[in-house]
Image (tube, rainbow, N blue to C red):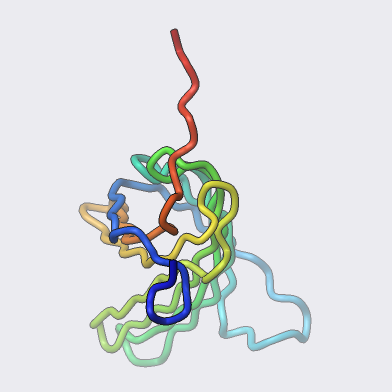
Length: 154
């Protein structure tokens, strides 16, 4: 069945919310490649809750001479489970600070879903409270996508 745009009907918008930890690892700039003012970091995130697994990626960031103004872009690849569905997907980040006012967009890269997460579409919001990181992933999956069978623990 099509959705009026020529695509596959999608199920209702869902939200998965939980916490995560993030480790940033500075990466050395390659000699003579790129601008040394642009910082490069390795990302390692561990997600808990309905989105459970690990994401690894890279971030480029730049601070300006104006206090509170900066920008970053990042890509990371998640592998794990989402609401009982196993697979992976990729995220694209674009963030900026304009004299202390933040702006952030994190999107699921179209067609990056694998396994039970094939066809995943969505966006992720991050909030930080008292140093702890939290996420809200708003997403859809194609109609008919069902969670993987849970193993019998009996």
